[in-house]
Image (cartoon, rainbow, N blue to C red; front, side, top):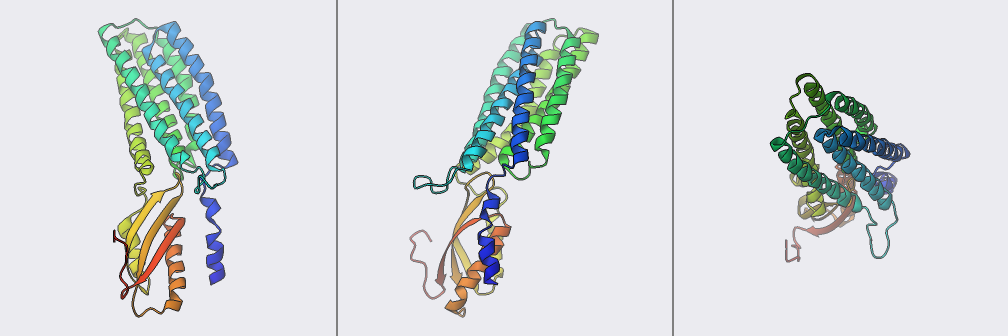
Length: 308
């Protein structure tokens, strides 16, 4: 039995941020595809005078930046821990997702100002060219989003990349529609209007990313962890009376740490404390908490910690 626990303890490296070779290739390919497309969009936007295209290009450039930041953070998080950084650089993955959210919000602000300006002074735009360029965008963004689809549930950064790309595909669909409307009706106001709709789509996705990455940056309890549930799991184990002083925080976008005080039932023999702790650890690993530090006390010896 102890052999099983011993093995389980050495499984931690599986929980490092999930930069597999396939995922690394997905990032590199995503960056390359989007850089090429940004250039095409900027040139077409300047040539046609379409704000929707330039909006989309600005947003895609933000995405290239965010993919790059995520990839860099993943690489950094694999570096070994040292005497200055005892957890290594894993937290950089959280900071990367926060930086990505902020980047997107800045882009949204700039585009919003330009769209308001356009509402006052509409510009005549060749709709068909705009629709064609955006159509290419739908394809490129959909392919890139698909590259991250498989791993998006496992990591906040991959989820960020997937969200960006899926939003981009939707955005490009919007630009195609606006281009076709302008071509058939010459209604120029549709260009800034579509820009506003695009901004709302981006804001929706960015807000949840910002909230979650801020929470993890501030050592908040990760959204997937329920403290009540931890308490219940502890009390379900025979020999544990209660648990208190529970702290759970994220070390990276995929790994969590925890400290807690376990209070043992006074009838529980001291020799059994170790195996009960192992049982509890095992339960916590199933809840995606990998680094666990436990203090033990009995009912008859209350906690000396001032904060308890």
